[in-house]
Image 1: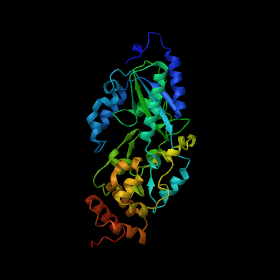
Image 2: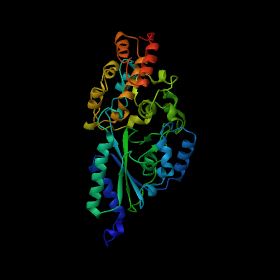
Image 3: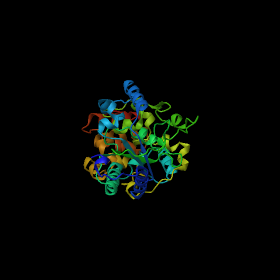
Image 4: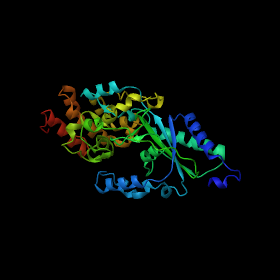
Length: 362
């Protein structure tokens, strides 16, 4: 239902926009902005990225085509997009670097240490939409949290939440990049916010630090080399040439954010739901490799890690064990999975054992 159908009384759209931001803060979001739906330049950039095959095996990105950059095609009647940002994580950069430097420990991307943000944000966004409806009556809308073909970073940039950095993450000059994004598509012609301008300047720290050199140019990511893609989205064996570069990163990668100078301004919020579960911020590789499938399903319930599945979890850890220091515990862990039912896991284990000079098959 359009806003015009709600009431004959005129609505003060500027006041409503201000009220939306106030309600967003009440829902626990640290940032909120409103944008239009024009994304022609971003659509062209996306088309070129897909044409070059830089999306790897994420065929779903190509299947959705231009719809990702055309909000009104995804939800007919959409006039504006409300974008929100939710901070996550503690100020634990030193701890993160310490884990990356300790080859016996497992590194999990900071966003995945606790509860799955999708569910938490979706719930809060729906409550925000409900509160707006309480104010003006029913209106056309739909809530998104990485759940449909949405160019969320471009929309958030246009809403003033931050600019898209050279590493392709969104950066808020007053809050860094450690935050999640969510959107509400609405059929209300709210006034839009000024788009954010870029402030990366000549800095290339994120490009230089990438372990696999997946950032092939400013704002240009080759997903086929990205550790986040390889450990989360990619099925099957991982390119042997990339495995030594992955270190102990078993689910995602944060290097480009950890090194970004703008994150010294991050006001990271210690959201209880995002605190580390199962000691994932301190666990060793052998400890996690010992999880049975039942253990994995039980321990990862309600987390983003669940989507990787047990076999990919083991594949990733096997590769990390291959990069770990040669110790009895590491060798014993690998030997314990040598007869795994999954072909990819077995191959990864054999590769890892070969790295330790222990590749003679039983």
